[in-house]
Image (tube, rainbow, N blue to C red):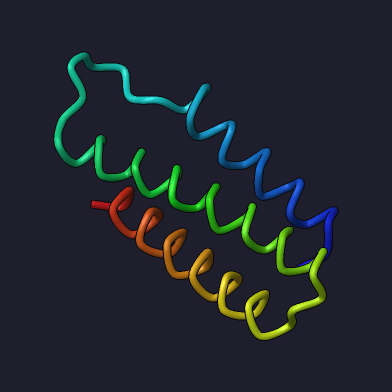
Length: 80
């Protein structure tokens, strides 16, 4: 994942957090879980950037896999 791709992923997450948010208040427990996953995804993106800066390929690969797993769960929960 290069820096441009990471920036695009941050933009996707920002869209989901600020534009595509649930319309009902208070949020259901399912909506809260999905929004928590977005926050975890942001942490993993930051960790990817950190691993890139330190040139730690193994950590970078791990963080990319974790990010992808979290986003897969996020989209899966959104389909229900």
